[in-house]
Image (cartoon, rainbow, N blue to C red; front, side, top):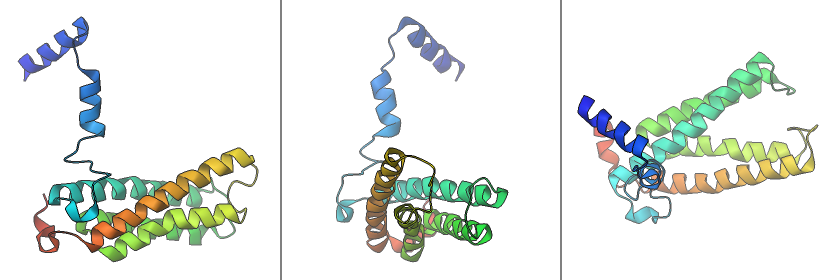
Length: 167
């Protein structure tokens, strides 16, 4: 291990590291991040990787939103109800990441949909400018669009009986 670390440091100092290759290995790998692969052609590893990444990202976002609403950092008419909803979405994301069940995917997909609706009716970020709200609407719409892919993946899970042994 120490020898491997020494070679890495030596390459880094001399400028011989393949930064693009290192970056693409963690961000874009055809085996673990198959975002443009059709759902029926996904392998078990690809399904697990894609669903877990989605569940982690939206689950953490929902958990932080729940805590922010409870702490009073984000204003709303009924902060406890909104915080409870965000907590339910975070729990559904945990179930989705662990078991890849379709109902959990539908619950998690409501988060960007509710964000879009709240933004459309002016209840979210009313003091911010139009450009900020348009940018946020685009982000919510992209996440909602991707949520439909996750729902289709959970519907067509290639090996639903092997969920406990995903590792």
